[in-house]
Each structure stands twice: as structure tokens, then as C-alpha cells.
Image (cartoon, rainbow, N blue to C red; front, side):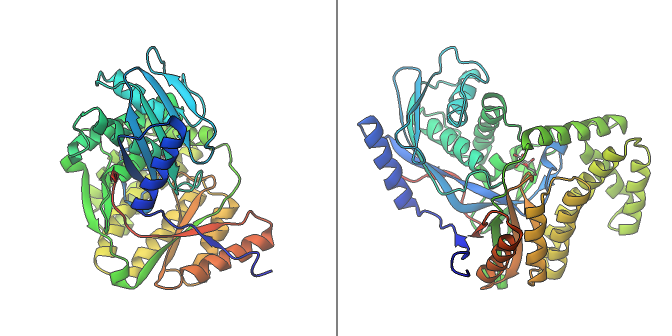
Length: 423
Ligand code: GLA
């Protein structure tokens, strides 16, 4: 039935409402008022997937969908956290003597931030915190980074660390968020998500250069990304595909890239992309030839595929930035499509739900569509004419129903502001 299958659009929670709900949950749980409320956004990556840990380029925007944290510092070293998803259950951890991996479940993410700060010898004690979020969980939209980054900003503020107020300082907070995810939660991540959540600006896409050794001034540039001015929308569809063994797969992709870089005698695959681009310039056939010569030096066909994805994806980021700035939506869309096809065929991180959603969006007239995030489930993005998101999302939902896939959900993405204090 058409109605039963009507696709849900996930609304974002306005700042005032998020602050009110987080404060209420805090007060109800702990019996006193929080010191403040902070929030941090989820993200979609426009292009540049699986490039961050290869020292490459990526291009995320922050979502209007955010995680709110009401927090108060404590005199002791205890951390208590609660979330509106399960308001009756408070997780508690002792920061003193805590070791990597010492907290299990979702609490590892916020507690791990305080742990990472203390490891870095920052003067951080315990805290009580309450979370309310509208970033869909497990959707490839960085709900984890929204949680770790909002926590980092809140702790920075209540413990007067002074990092949250400058872009350079935020890079320090980002490293705490990453350490929490990697070392406490055991979730491998390359930095794209946390940089997006902390450093994106409203109306802009963040061109992030993950080459090691760059200063905060050098590693980002803000690119205009005003879709409405171009008569466009960015549709996000969360496929709600069941979770796959993505942790192992992500780590396996990283390991293969590192091995291939070692065989090619470079520190990272970015160097391969840059070396070829430096001699071939913008000439596509010269680039292809240069890439083929590098690939011919790799004995393993799997490594060939992975390297081909990473190198071409890094090039596609600069090509997309140029095409979008020039108003060339056909080329921008073509690059979205090429990115997805490369992630499907060479990097092999898509699942049937992602491919069907992308194919449907393209057939329904999207300029381009691709998976976003790590893959193995999660979301797609599609660049569509203004006013067409709902109709295209519905077509995807109808096709999913016919295939017996889970019902997808959707949201409208506009480039939103970074993590900040809201109350
Ligand atoms: C996940 C990781 C990011 C990045 C993407 C793929 O979202 O957390 O660091 O590697 O996958 O681009």
C-alpha cells in the first residue's frame, strides 16, 4: 500500500528544542541543572571516500541533524552518561586508572573523550552528561563523531581548556575525539567525520586535506556550497540495510592500502596520486596511463583495485570542487556517479541496498548519486533539482519494498554549522 510505504523524512531538532530536551533529561536523571548544553552535527561526505586514511582529500558538509549534550563537571573522576534512547539506564565509569578499551557499549564514546584528554595531561575531571540526538544511528552519517565532538567541546568549555574557540584549537579536540573512537570504542576512523563535525561552516563544504604535517590553516579550505542558489537539493537516503561485518572490512581496506603503498615505495597513496598528477597535468589519458604504470607494479589484483579507487577518488575531489564552482552540474553529477561506481567495483564497499538506491535516483533524474561514508550499509546522497527529493526518495522506498529490503528513510541535507554551545 502506498501509504504504509510512505517514506519518512527525519527532521532535525532546532537548537532551542534540543537544549531544552537535553537539559530536561539531565535534570531528571541527576537531580540538578547542567552547566550548559553543546551540540555537534552529523555529516555527509560529498566526495572523497576512503581517502582520509590514505592522506587524501575529502569534501564533507555538516548536517542540520545534531547531537545535543547537557553536561556538568564533577569534583571527582567519575563519568556518568545517559541518552534519550534509553533514559532509564545510566552508564558509569571511573576515569582514574581507566585503560584503553576499558568501557564497553555506547558510553565508550563520550567517556573515551575525557580519558583521551587525561592521557594528554589536560586538567579534566569527571562529568555527568545527558544526550539527545536526531542524527540517525548506524546510518553512515557520523552519529559517533557527533557524540565524541559534542563531548569534547563541552569538556573543553567546562574545564576551561580554551581549544574550542579557534579552528586551530578544535584540531586538538578532534584528536581527542578520534582517540576515543579508535582506542576506547575500538572503532577505526580516519578523521573525516570529526573534522566535519568540528570545522564545517554553514553554506560551505569543507575541502579537507589529510596529508600529514599540514597546519590547521593549510589543511582546510571552505568551499561555497549553496544548493538553493543553484535550484538544487541534496537528498540523503538511509538504506537501513542490516549491519554487515564492517569493522573488519574497514580495517582490511586500510591494511591493503598500506601494503600497496609500501610495495610502491611511497608513504601513502596520496603520493601516487600527486606524482602522476604532477607529470600528467589535467590530461585524463595521461593520468590513466600514469596510473596504469603504477598499477602494473602491483602483483595482487585486489591491491590493484583498491589503489585504483583511492587514486582516482582523490582526483575526483579536486575535479568536483572545480566543476561545482563553475556551475557545471552535469559534470558534478558524473563525478558523484564515478565515485560510487569505483566504490562498488574497485573498493567493494557497497551492498545491494546502496546500489539499488543509487541506480533508482539516477533513473529518476538525479544529476548524480553515490554512497556516502564507510559503506557496507548506510546512506546514499543524490544531487537533484529543488523540490524533487520526496518523490525520488519514495521511488527508492517503493523499489526497496518490492525487493523485500528494509524500509529506507530520508532527510534533506543543507550545509549546516559546526559544533557549538547552544545553552
Ligand atoms: C568512515 C570513517 C571515515 C572515513 C569514511 C570513508 O566514515 O570514520 O574516517 O574513512 O568511513 O570515507
